[in-house]
Length: 114
Length: 115
Image (cartoon, rainbow over all chains, first blue to last red; front, side, top):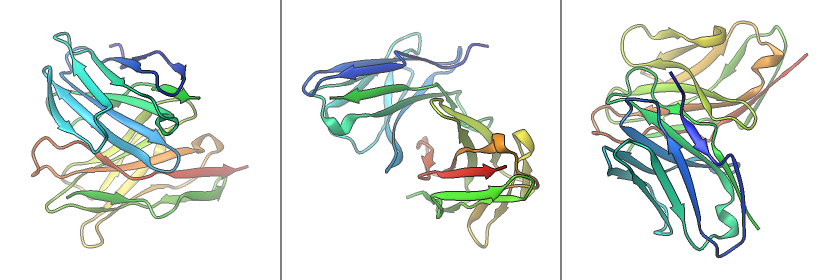
């Protein structure tokens, strides 16, 4: 079974630009969650999509948005990038229940804003 | 609201010695608890979970964790540390009575095993 695939692995963007990150979950998983990981803050929850609907949302500004397609692939978008958006962005997929392994994570996209 | 705390940013242990990485949680009911490990430039990998049943759960790579309801703790342990265990460890919690809320993670503990 293929794992969670995140693309691209690395990105360098300039302040003010926008960026789109992609996540393909494990086949059959309908839930995709996004987390931002920074050294000082650990993992901060961004949002979760389930069957193309946003089911949960973390405490991030509106510059952070996402969507999920009918094949469960998800994208997140960050507009008007700020230096503080530099982080590792992790995508995690899960089945209809968390009881097995919780989340399965992708390797992440490391975003650097300069 | 659910929360989890990892009180130690860094744990150092000599190879061959036992290791403990601490985690305490706060949920309104009985928690679902998880431990994950992260190696450099990688995502998080599942180690073990507690859902219900025996308080001592065994997981991957020889790790185990003990659920202690009275102390609201879920400490990760290994009898004999390896240099290859050096990584970042995350504890996570979910309150099963709170609907489809996401996993809440601690800030992580960096484990360094010294040869």
